[in-house]
Image 1: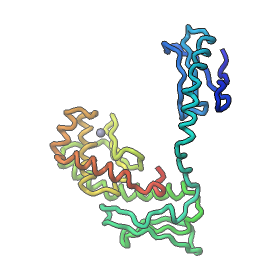
Image 2 (image 1 turned 60 degrees about the vertical axis):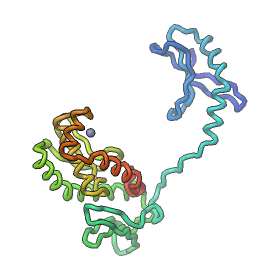
Image 3 (image 1 turned 180 degrees about the vertical axis):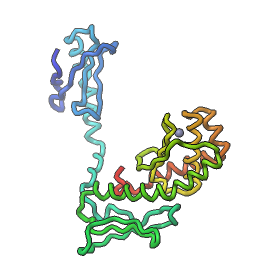
Image 4 (image 1 turned 30 degrees about the vertical axis):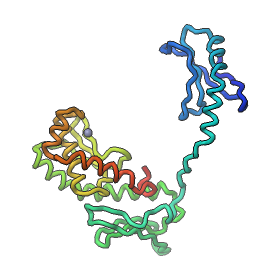
Length: 255
Ligand SMILES: [Zn+2]
């Protein structure tokens, strides 16, 4: 049995990879957009290859339809490689650090490129970042956020520890794409530094949520009953956190 074959279609020959499967009960042609070789013929272990090939030939119209649909879909914008002013927002909102921060881009030739969050003047200053690989700027920004999060969120956590009587073995901070917080089986809680972009009440909800996981390491009814005890408005806070997540300055954060 070959590893692949060419399926003739009216859009030209399409390469289809072939995989013998012990689990599959019937022949199938699958489309997996993430894989480089997007079409795959799955052949059950006891099925002759010729039979599978005949089946695949019967899916020609379907294969053509998928290719045509893909061609019509808008292509995602390629991620920018270098930082420019246009990729940055005008302002950032850090409620827990005092509100709206201006984003100031400067070109001071006498100083090295840098990025600094000035909480006194409420500014994010970026010097000579134009043309710098965007990943470097994002990495620096994430480091800055993590540092501030540690300073600001640690006392808030201590407050919730006192209030709930639940205490983590360790508290860590990082920037995370999709989770505001997490709690592992070793009772370590990790908080997302992006909480700096959210309101105090939303932060308290996340802290309570993670602390409650120390007692209930799941999202069962008992877990939510416990959360509700300390944070009756949790549904509202979850909605608000989802909204804020959509509005984060993604080019600056980079995840
Ligand atoms: Zn949870």
